[in-house]
Image (tube, rainbow, N blue to C red; front, side, top):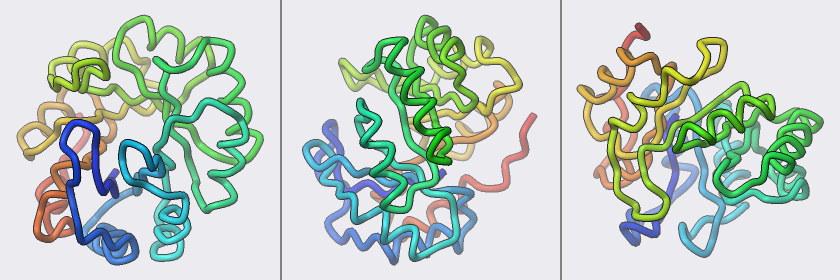
Length: 210
């Protein structure tokens, strides 16, 4: 999953020449399976229009990545061309997570539920999550540790799609995560810093699942 992210709270502006259409097409041409698009304006300088632009540029599935806390934002994601939404377990009560998963299903969207701790995996599974992303970044300190994903992946049933997120910057790390049992990876900041993000993506594609 290749990400389109102009800025981040931990690193500031990642890419000044942020052309969504060009980036999306380049990612698609170089092997991306899906695109993640930041729409949060406050911390990531994102915009809902970026969803429309990415969807129009490629036929790839589009994930809306934002701080979603209300079912209206699910409808909004659908209206702007998203195929999936990110739900962050740490931000949501068990009841609200269940409600948003149901809303996503109602509107024909997949949901990637992001977790960082064992208790969040339990909450995600209890709510019915089928795609679980383990974030290597501590949302309180912004520190990144790939061992987080490797430690927690065993708690996610094989019937779920297991996604590793954050801090991935080498093919060796992708191979490590595949060996640990992950089905997919999400890469953002590393690609955004490349002169040609699409070509940069090719360093990570083609790693077989274990």
